[in-house]
Amino acid sequence: MTGFPDPRGGAPDGDGTEPAEPLLRQPPGYLDAPPGAFAQIRRRAARRRRVRAAGGGLAAAVVLTGSVYLVGAMTSHGSDDVVSPPASSSLTSAATSAPAPTHSTAPTPTPGTTAPPGTGTRSPTATGTATPDPTPTRTGPASGSGATPMCATSQLTAALGGGDAGAGSLFRYLVLTNHSSTACHLTGYPGLSMLDADGRQIGAPADRQPMAYSAVVLRPGGSVSDTIHTVNQQGTCLPASVKLRIYPPGNTAWLDFPGSVTNCDNLFTVTPFTAGRTGNPPS
Image 1 (cartoon, helix red, strand yellow):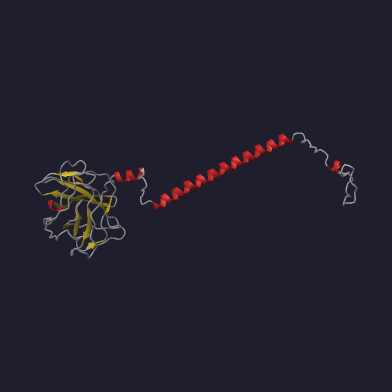
Image 2: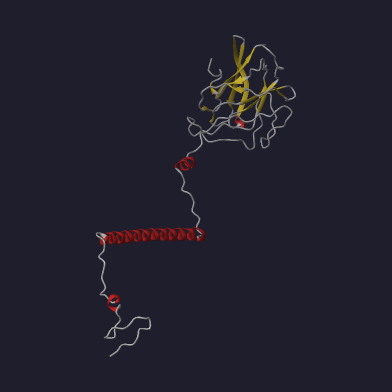
């Protein structure tokens, strides 16, 4: 059988096949992989798996942290509970400790002023005693005074006692006597001021001379005393007093009594009370 002419110009073989067909249809051949290629592929695959695993763990941690933060924020802003800070040991100790007692003298009126409110009106007698105070100020018993109450001003009589002098100094003893029928006690310093004949204060009240002291019990008729210290006509002197005004310890009521004391060189001090009538320290 005669073949048909090849439209591309080539003549067909006698069996009807193209002369180039065997060349175009040669059996396929395969190229071998380079040495070590599979191992490299496995290593790369293992590395990609590790990277994916690490990235997944990091993402999970970020999601967990964000969830915890979101829950905490919603809880803190949505809660109505009020949390108080715990009391510290310093606050607890400050709340449970009591302040130490202090010794102070009742205030003395300045010149030209009236008596402190609530102290009552005084009518001093010749002996220096005052009319009974309708509301005497009292405190509890002091250390060493047993069950005796603090002496009220109305229980006491004031007077200047003896004195002493030396090295230009003058010392006078201020004596308080319990004229009531019950025992009482006094502790510490009095308030003391100098007055003129019209009852006006001369200068500043007496300063306190630092000394140790304790409670002194006054039986009925018993006395306590302290020492007034001034100097004898040195420096600038204020007018001599005609009367003295004393506030017994723990009282806002006072006693006015006759007494001449001169404040010279701005020295006018008083000691705390002690037992007896000869000052502190006893002479």
